[in-house]
Image (cartoon, rainbow, N blue to C red; front, side):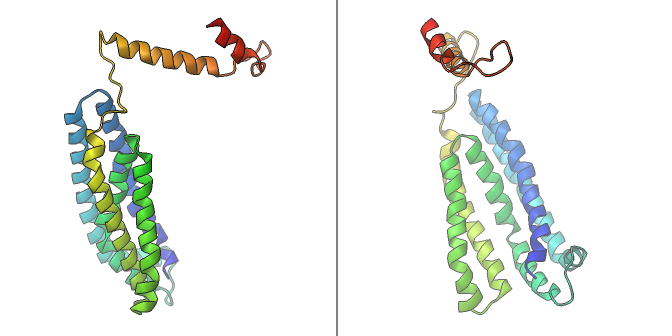
Length: 220
């Protein structure tokens, strides 16, 4: 019964990716330009958009989840289990949307470890709570849904706790402005080294010989 809910769950995640994966690179560009105000404005707009989308999805799922689930292949034997799961999961749509969306902003700023930890904390929480709610409290599929919602809320709390620090941290941003010769030379030197480290093709179009990189290094 729970398996047939996956299409609806993927649709919810897709809306989160739509906003998060679109806004996060934009915020990164602004941060790279040193325009923190525009980056924060982008984050705020995405946050508000996800709140609106969450409200709409919650209403749609609560009203039409039975119809959707039957369309996705639920049978008369499994529909009640699927509806019980989606009724609770729909209430937690807000947590799912914001967790996935805000995590994209954290990862896009170069803090992949923090983004990974937010997912890991939620997963571990889910693993711990599932048997407690399903078997300990005898809630069945409703317990599985409640555990999922709680784990998403925990991941969201972790992401929101670190998000302001991530946006204010500029140590990984290199701003190149007109007349900023130091940064220009640094980037040019980095690109030159990467180019020389890459094997150069020979006249037959194949990769460089093993000694080519050493020869290029000596040529520098």
